[in-house]
Image (cartoon, rainbow, N blue to C red):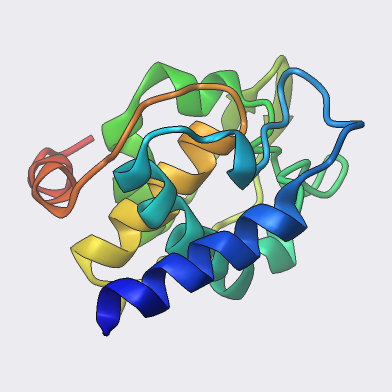
Length: 148
């Protein structure tokens, strides 16, 4: 029964994700061919919209000079593990993203599980052109063990 529900959910997302006007850097869920990546990305999109989109915007473009973009982001591309730590623990201090300095603190999300962080990361890294594949909970656990 779970497989049928998941299949229906994926089908619904595929139908509503199709956009003939998408740019090369903005993929839709429908363009993800790997089933596991797609499953993680679907849940990751929901989690992203719940926890991240208020500041970083639904399309990941950030808020001008206040909140850095995730789409595109050279800062995120440099270190996938750092992204996991920022999601979990937040960020204080100045960073440079795409040549622009940002110094707005980002609160952490300490209540997110490693699996939830993995799904958010799978979504943002695969939908906005980085094609990291599935970032799983075990990888997130290892990323979080490492100190910046």
